Length: 109
Image (cartoon, rainbow, N blue to C red; front, side):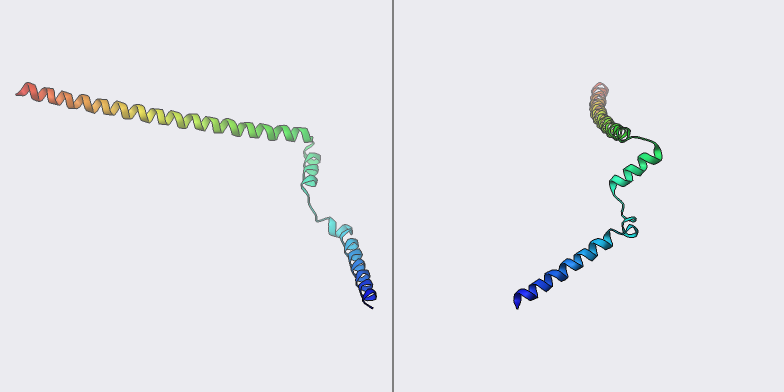
């Protein structure tokens, strides 16, 4: 009796599975499904480009990003060097000014 019940359940499940597969394979259901591969294929067709040219453009974009990042880091380093230079110069200027004032005070006495 249990075997008959399990057999009926298995048949029911396989029938349902078959109906789901049939429903999924209808053109109206799958036409709305978009994939990355499909998008790339459509882009290649519309723009008349190859997959290689797309890959080359992506590589160039990545290289530009690296160059921009390197340039940013160089400018940041330059800024820090300028800050240190200006701070050092202003410190020496203050010291010189103080020494001049002390010298003048010494002369005035």
